[in-house]
Image (cartoon, rainbow, N blue to C red; front, side, top):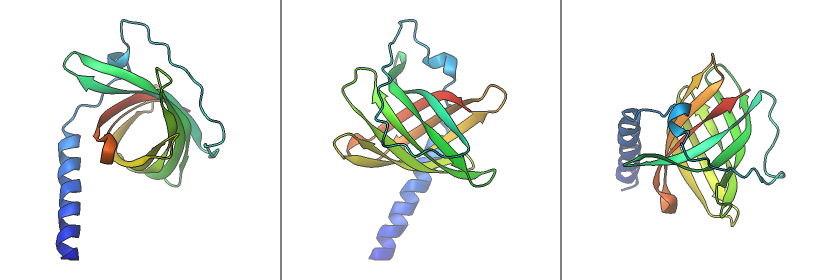
Length: 160
């Protein structure tokens, strides 16, 4: 029975990755709304460990019929252990200031896997894909959040 459940979970993850890979990653220009959105940058300072490779900052959004809806901002640090693998930690905050939290995870090539947690301690896993534009130091990503926050989220930003 355990083997069947494990097989179903792995199969579901593989099918999810296949369907997510068909999604076109957003470009930074697509998330820039004609309406000005003020992003509060009041992040908790104790949650982020400083890694030695660099930092990132950006926005996250969801997509609906009319385009991308900016939900908030994110920032953090990353550490590369090789050209293709590494880890990251960061904080996120909604544009309304109604929710915030932290995130952490790993990346292997274009695949990201991690955990996102809000300020009340509730957490969920996410899996997704990302792309780096090394010419402009920009990133774009798409991820499926599992659990009670289930949904697809997009992110764009810059890294150093």
